[in-house]
Image 1 (cartoon, rainbow, N blue to C red):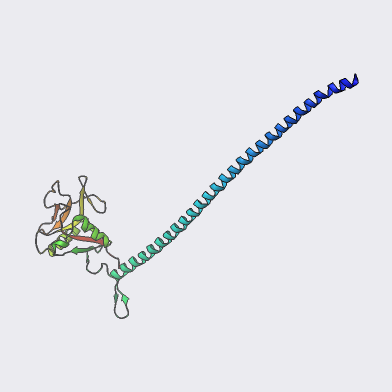
Image 2: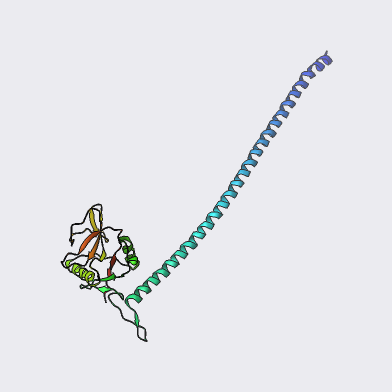
Amino acid sequence: MFTTNRILGEKPLRGRHGVQLVACSLGILCVILVAAIVTSDQTALIGDLRQNNSILTSESQQLQMEKSALERQVETLRRERTELSLTRTQRILDAYCPKTGDKEERRCNPCQEGWLLSPSKSSCYLVKTTKNYHDWKTWEEAGEDCRQRNADLVVIESQQEQEFIREISHEYSDISLYRYWIGLRRTSEVWKWVDGSNLTESYWINRPSDNKDCAASVQWSSPEGWRAEDCAYKYRWICEMKALSV
C-alpha cells in the first residue's frame, strides 16, 4: 500500500517540475529576446546619433569657414573704404589747396580750379561749355556728371543767383540757341529742385508745356531765362557745389 501510493504520488510531482522548467526556459528566452531587441534598438539609435553628430560637426565646420570668409571680406571692405576715404580727402585737399612753390606750401581757394565763385561767395559753379554736340548730355547724364564731381546741377535760390546764372549763360553762349541744364525737373505735375525742395520762385520765359519736364537756362535779355525742355535732349549744363570757407 505504501509502495503503490508513493509510486502514484511521484508522477504528478515530476509533471509539475517539467512545466516549471518549460516556463522558466520560456521566461529566459523572452528576457533574452527583449534584451536583444533593446540592444538592437540602442545600437541603431547610437548609430543614428553618431551620424547626426557627424553631419552637425560637418555643418558647424562649414559655417565656421563661411564665417571666417565673411570676416575677411568685411575687413577687406573696411580697409578699402578707409583707403578710398583717404584718397577722396587727399583729392579734395589737392583741388582746393594746391601746393605752390618749391616748398610745396598749400594755398586754399573757395573753389576748385575752373569753377566760378558766386557773388554771395557761398557756391561754386562749373559751366560745361563744350562746343562739340557729341559731348553734350541729357538732363540725367548732366546730373550724373555733376555728382561725380561731388556737386549737382545748379539750384537757383534767389533773384541774385538767377541773374548770375543768366549772365553765365550769356557769357558762355556763342549761339543764342544754346541751353544749359539746371537742377529743376517736374515730377507728378510738381516742379522740384534736385535737393528735394519745391519751386517757389520761377523765371520762365514762356509757360512750360505739358510734355517737357526739365528746365534749362538760356541766353535772354530779360530777367527771365528758363525754358522747359525734353529731358532726353542734349545740352550743356551747370554744376554747383558749396564754396570752401577760407
